[in-house]
Length: 343
Image (cartoon, rainbow, N blue to C red):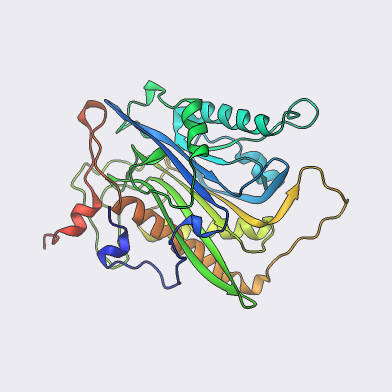
């Protein structure tokens, strides 16, 4: 599996983190459970934003809905309160309820007072529809799969046709999970912004590579009715408002590749920072919040755009072939890039 830079394609101009991955943000881990059997190609991807008890020590978070054709869970409360209190699970459309239950059980195991002596918990699950390459009616994802993805999460992560990305399609090619990161400096200190995408969007024939080429997967050019979930992680000192603005710029990275956010596409960005943690039981009435100057936020805007664009391309270039329901399959971008395109 080759990442997009191995094909001499370099999206953007900013420096990347060590892994060029969302896990370049200290404390972030990712785990996949992949289910591939017969007509089923699906799974769960878990993003652990930070170690420890997230319910008791929440993260500042934000949501940007570019086009809301989706069935995710928990986003309304994240948008309203600006906080994240569980790991993030990615899965297929019919797995959202199951994964929500798994996150609730995970939180209650750590915090037995949830729903009794204190508030309920807000599980965050995002989805894309993998029904072309997987039998979505099989309802294959289990709570055990979701909990296992959380359990095995680590800093070194896989990309392509893994976890929630097993059955995804992008611009007519095989899609999936991809990641990238960008580095910036504030007052002499290095900061990281990383992106992870569940890429399942784009009309076949619309893809435009950073070098201007337009790969054609030679499949029917159907209406745009896929989705993409972008998760942005950073260690920048930003507040909820600034994080919302940064999330909005991920849309520029999606659009650079040729997307126009079709009517049937669910395009959602969820972001969080490891700074400005929010105590479930604050000791004081007033909290101190660190925030970068808006005069310097352009670097974060560019980072969100570039990391999202490269994460999508990595999802496509590392994807491996699957054969799904009724023999359905999709070509690989890596095969197209590895051959000389016809003139």
